[in-house]
Length: 634
Image (cartoon, rainbow, N blue to C red; front, side, top):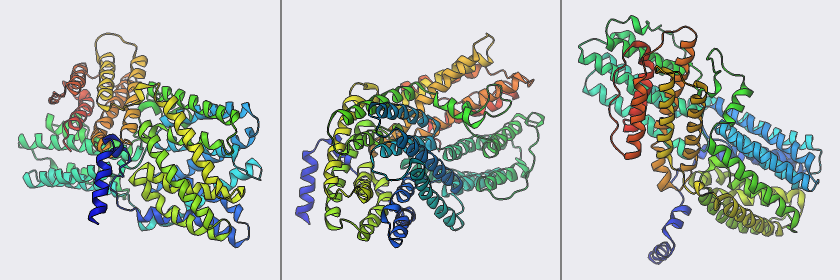
């Protein structure tokens, strides 16, 4: 044992530090529930097909189930079911598109390149859009190369059937775990906040602080292994940010020797019940401007802002109409988010170029299963899955090891029902590998894909060798064309992107609430573009090796608070345009500009001044939330 430990230390000493950090798996507890779900979802269609004497017919449903489980990012059961449904639709669209452009030579390459552009832009919509884009691209590539006997519509239907089977399993499990654990933490925070409002003292303040820290840790831990932006967890972090604003208003009341009144505490408890989806009797909050003192007005405004986050449609204002009169239609909302962010558009160009080159390689060179080159490029270069270099290295190493495992499995169990045993073991281990790192995930996924494709292909163990060669070529294309010519993709700088976003938000504040006329649509679009770049950088940063991603996760509350500030500003402009009193909030532009500069220089963030009028209080509260998040007060 001592000699084994010494040899491991020697290897670690000889390897470069960056390489050790990239390939080192992150510590993780096995997610037994998801591992069991993956096993049942993937193996059941194959087992049914074996019982019917047609093992090959279970391949596409098993692939649909595997794709749905691989896209699982946690969250509420409603959100998970919706994500699975979107994955099913995107996968079906990919099978249809790939089936109809299959075998058309250069037209096939052109079609895959166009689909890669759509997939990249879909990534800007959020976590669900990201997995939808990935599955649209992956299934279309598979449909162009995998030897499938049925018509494209039949293959698409079988894939959807497998994804629907996974949705059914998730819904069957729902009664056992009806509440998202992160929601319970946020609800506990607001219950502790209610206790503080009733009895503001050191003990209740400490309990509130502990509950809030615990809730932050639970959400950030879940976020660390789940790629893509996530609406539900974004809302929960925004609620935790807002709880600090409510707490400060309660402190102001206590300093003025004013009782917060039981009604405010009950309102905080109703927010907790609303977070959990429990039935509750809403107690209307009085108009904040009619309160007797500034401290009471501040408390009522802060509580109203929290309930707005629970009951309102908390999405970035890219899904609101420019007038604020009504939400956009879903299709227009998706198109608006797909256009947001210069980095996203640049990534779409990078992915399209790499996929086009992979298609050219497939046409010009005699690679037996050349569509796997495009498949590798698609998976490695997805933006929400993080740093290109780290992902390419992890994926490449994992694919090499996985190909060796696949070759051994095919040699042992070449055909028939015996294939169900290794498929079951690999499916069971895959969710755990995903939590450790993407190289380990590829180690389990690659032999699983090899076994699936061998069912209709009947190539035997040589399929693993072919897969290995294609993976090496795909990784080389990603590194040479998707990484080296684009120095901006080598790192994911969150701090400067956040500062740039706050500067753009400050410009919008100044134009919207200042005395001079400004082109508000242009300023608003510029601010959302900067926020889009910030989100893209953050998604890439948290998928870096653990030493980097742990530091980057600390910026997430500030990212969400910045989005919230711009949302509130846009809504305020819309209400003003429809007759509401205009706020005197021009001074907030200077405050936000100062925050941006403090971020760049690393200086402490100063307190946000009190608003000059009550119309400005929601804006001031939103900016104060940014300050709390930047100061690490969670």
